[in-house]
Length: 313
Image (cartoon, rainbow, N blue to C red; front, side, top):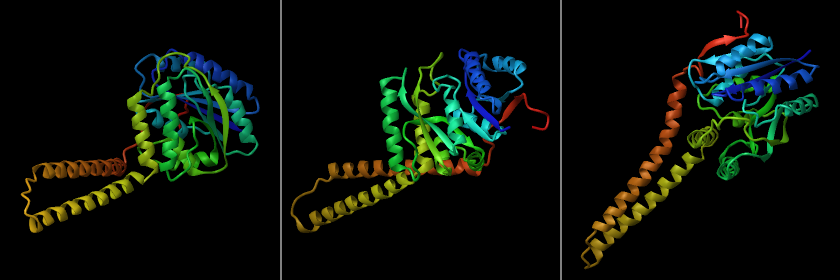
């Protein structure tokens, strides 16, 4: 009998934790043709999330818990759960119940029919602000124009991965992670499954604007060299303008009688070239910063507590 693993990253989810477990448990019990393990990853929660997970694991032997030593971030929590799963296929789903657990059964059916990656594609997104809907819509289209790989539009991290695709994904150990892009990069037979996203059951979003911008930066810099090419183009165009300014200055000095005051032109030139230089250095610095993070070879995460795992796991 095949084993299905379900990975659930959790951060301050005490209001939804029990309801999330109950719905997931019901769905997995309905998939009677499969054994299952339910892996919750506590990403340094500051509320009662870990306490509730301990109680759930004490009652259900199929539940396993990984608890981080601190908050390492959503994308890292997903990776930790997948690192520690043993399933023939693994599903990633958030605890907030915006992605309906009942869709897992449809993903498993698509997997049985030959798909190696089944990703949820959001058809309707209820309970989200107009700003978030608009920014998400244009972000996915923007990153697809820049990226070297085709990242499916209107998707999140809710997906099923066959063991072959999962092992390929786990071979990628970069620090700055954009999971949906990484899964698209590994390839295999991928299938979109449309579903209607529900409002949050309780609590608040764990992706405020700051974290959304950080994720967007990781996506762009992790899957595209376009910003570096753009920096090169900007530098080239700025050099042409600077050269034209030099020629104009020499012409005015050598071939005209006009007195050139020069202060305004000089200040504009300095500010313009200085601003462009700082912009280009900033883009290069972002890439260098990521190289620095990678060469330190620090572990992606530190687990302070494992619950439900045997001594050899």
